[in-house]
Amino acid sequence: MKKQYALAFDNVSKQFKSRHKTVEAMRNVSLTVEDGEVFGFVGPNGAGKSTTIKVMLDIINDYDGQVRIYGVDAHHAHARKGVAYVPESPALYEQFTPLEILRMALDMYGIRRTDANAWCMQWLERFSVAGNAKRRIRELSKGNVQRVALAHALVVQPRLLILDEPLSGLDPVGRKDVVDILAEYKRAGGAIFFTSHVLHDVERIADRFGFIHQGQLLTVRSPQELAKERAGRYLVRYQGNATDQRAVGTIRNGEFEIELPEAELPAFISQLHANGSHLLSVKPAVSLESVFFQILQSTPV
Figure 1: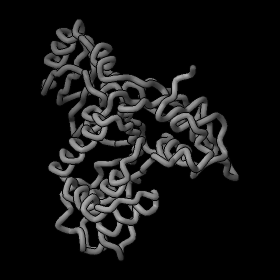
Figure 2: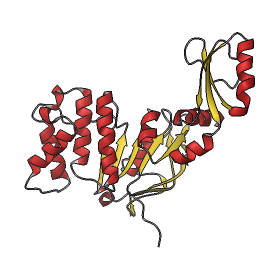
Figure 3: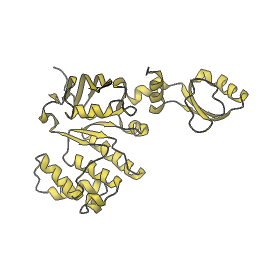
Figure 4: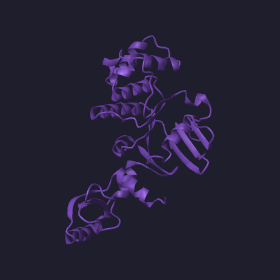
């Protein structure tokens, strides 16, 4: 019997045609997300992240390949019965209050609760916006609107949570609070598919992460695989001349960064001293950011 995933893409491709050219927004993308798994989706602007989300939500439906949500073809509306989505810039009705927004979510999902108000207030409290429960959305800060949007998604207790830049607009305390809540949701068996430009957030939250570039899913890895692959490699940051063509572009005026295997470190550091450059730091290259830029540099444009 074929395994049923929370989310499964099978060789999905999508092209956009204009008068002058054809753009491959997705090229044979295949991936799966299991119950209780957090999948981070990473890529530069225009890589295909938003198109991927629109495909799974059936906002874009003229594509090749197949998408299934809990075994149901994503072309069917009932595939998204247990799905909640939070866009990068939530467009909540500004004339309503957070409490009304969450009550509306319960109604839209056909959820009838005798304690609906208390249930909604509980979620607003968890996202630290209960004090604004009866203020208009238009009166709230961007960060608080983001919190309300996340509460709006979780109040219906979805099986699959789709998040586009979920920590955008939040301060450090808010980011930690949301990460903790998402961790609880995952432990309860919920699945999460999320995009983020903040690679540190992906490392903190994701069980696996996928890199998409120019519509092509280049790799899918876990933090454990990343640590194993990057063992024995180091990031060297220095100030002075770009002494090696492999050095990443200027970090700030006169500063450069290069990734090297441990065996090359002594010779490179000696070369820096000989050229009058100043060594700033040497640290292990076990980071999503280092892999991200390495993949981008090695991928033909």
